Image 1: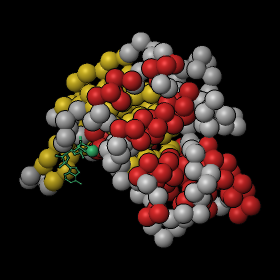
Image 2 (image 1 turned 90 degrees about the vertical axis):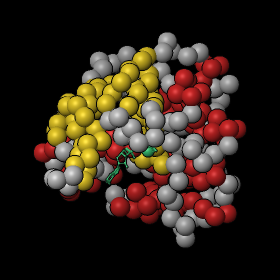
Image 3 (image 1 turned 120 degrees about the vertical axis):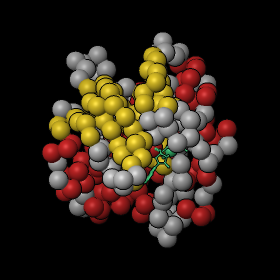
Amino acid sequence: MSQVAQAPSSSAAVNNSKSRQPILRLVGIEKVYGTVTNPLTVLRDIKLEVQEGEYVAIIGPSGAGKSTMLNILGCLDRPTRGAYFLKGDDVAQMNDAQLSHIRKTRIGFVFQSFQLISHLSVLENVELPMFYARISKRQRRKKCMEIIERVGLGKRWKHRPNELSGGENQRAAIARALANDPAMILADEPTGNLDSATSTEIMSILHELHDSGRTIVLITHDQEIAAAAPRRVSLRDGQLDNDTHNQAPSATEVHP
Ligand SMILES: Nc1ncnc2c1ncn2[C@@H]1O[C@H](COP(=O)(O)OP(=O)(O)OP(=O)(O)O)[C@@H](O)[C@H]1O
Ligand SMILES: [Mg+2]
């Protein structure tokens, strides 16, 4: 059995057969950059529901608005128009402190460029979200070491990012995303800087996190990764253009 599958049960883990309510609901979302005289509309009339425990790949050409949409989903950015409900709560009504609390407690981010802090060790990077959540040092250390083991970095916890491979950096970034036990992981091209073998390892960690009940929304340009996702949403010129559900892939397809 894999490291992640053996993880202690998480408060985020949900029984997929439980009544399914949307964890995310976008209604008529629009995002406009630029100025009043020279507006650039990058998202238009986006309607999307994601159920708790779903695994969704966002695909589409460069510039289609994928990262913009993920940043809105992650409360890193606000839409210009439209409504975003996160577990039924209207994000537009929240102030910056409430949004920051949501980012810290409900959402784990994984980025293509890892975005680890270079002068901190793996352990210190993974600890940061818990530090900001004011969790005691003793509790932080214990939980972070468990998570670091789960992503297969048990022997690398003292290392800094520049002493690790790309795959190890991404494992550390996933561990950091898991620090506050978020129900939802948002990943923007998490394998974009990795070779194909390492990508497969990182994807199997994300699939296992999904199997343990987390909602995963990831952007990818990789057709194989998109094909393995149970659901694919494609964006084109800022609009949703396709939303397809696969039949559930077999265990061997997901974890070869
Ligand atoms: N802060 C910004 N100000 C102005 N325009 C922006 C800003 N952020 C993104 N854009 C524009 O919005 C459009 C969508 O960008 P976005 O990053 O969401 O695309 P993407 O689908 O993620 O592309 P890629 O696959 O290349 O990452 C692009 O035309 C981009 O130039
Ligand atoms: Mg992008």
